[in-house]
Length: 288
Ligand SMILES: Nc1ncnc2c1ncn2[C@@H]1O[C@H](COP(=O)(O)OP(=O)(O)OP(=O)(O)O)[C@@H](O)[C@H]1O
Image (cartoon, rainbow, N blue to C red):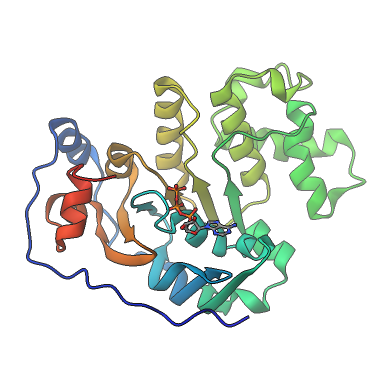
């Protein structure tokens, strides 16, 4: 189904500088400098997504860089999750969803990549931790078995399971109790297990849809630290309502409003020197 005609809204407006709250300034001082030669891992071009007549994402063009965290921010309903779910074609599972424009992974149109392979390469972690009702080991091994290791013995899967749990910062906590049911872990541990499960497939891009919204501040801090480590080896795209989080861990930030990309740039620029009034209002908390 072709998407409905694109309706453009005017968002250009005079620059209104915003002073970020104090904790954000400390966070940005702590952020390491970006590599100026970051490789473009994904790109969406003139992406439009509609659910029936409802246009959720409207003409968005955006790169996703290797070794960086891209934070998608914007008020509720602006299309962040829809954009995120389009990157590995999960959005197509929604009845009535239609897409226009192009999504590219490593130079290939995602439409020509076999969809299971695409979802392995562009892996997603959801808002609510959703471990399978099985052991910690089997949760991670599941991802490996799905990749063709179905008949592989447990002993042979131990090394990659351990590696995924280590990358997710969970091995030290659960390594001696891998047969424990995953659902008996804390919420923060469950979310890191879901990240381990995603990492087991060796993705190139990790999609995180508000991964900390169900977690307490301590678990949130652990996962933010983990994301900053993981970005070294892949590209991370995170949807977050938490502006401080976007500022703390985002290398680049995309601000969306009513389905459109209003502003995209380095996190420090978007938060401290926004080009558009709408961005300035949003990052200063004038609306949410
Ligand atoms: N399955 C669906 N069917 C119809 N409309 C939908 C569907 N999913 C989302 N929408 C609509 O598409 C628009 C964008 O939704 P989306 O969830 O992508 O926004 P969001 O910015 O992620 O919101 P939130 O921050 O509240 O999660 C909204 O108007 C929403 O109501």
